Amino acid sequence: MKKSQEVVADPYSEAMSIALYALAPRAKSRDELLKQLVKRRVDADIANSVLDSLELQGLLNDLEFAKLWSESRQRSKKLSKRVIAGELRVKGVSQDIISEVIEQIDDESEYAQALLLAQRKFNSISHLDPEVVYRRISGLLARRGYGHGICSKIMRELTNKN
Image (tube, rainbow, N blue to C red; front, side, top):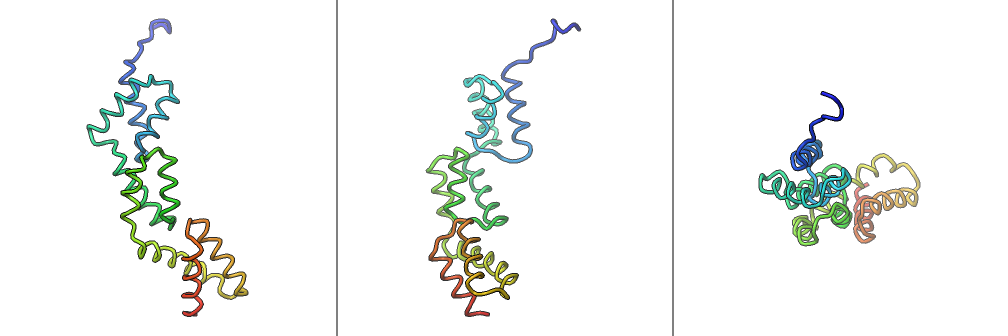
């Protein structure tokens, strides 16, 4: 077949292939996937049609995506609710869904995550000057989105234990 006779794929099928390949490595929010399709020059109507179809098939679900994202970020990075909410906002998840997911993280489990993170750091730097220890642990917790109140409470707990 000559180049001038190449078969042009159905735009919907092409968009569906792009979307499925994009979903292969990890789940994505509807907005992330829409942006990816638009970036690949897929017509907005076709992109929305593909996304609707993926939602009907259960392959695209912002609530499930947000729950999985939240669990993963808590487990692997020990991030605070505030940081997770910000990440979900950037990914285009609606505020209603973000609120629902963040409400599922109770204060005690968030504190336990922060304490575990701080304890690990403390174990490796406890030989240093107390001011340096405090600065490093509070900096670590702040980067993960934990407030000053949690940091102070954790530092009191760590210094009382050791």
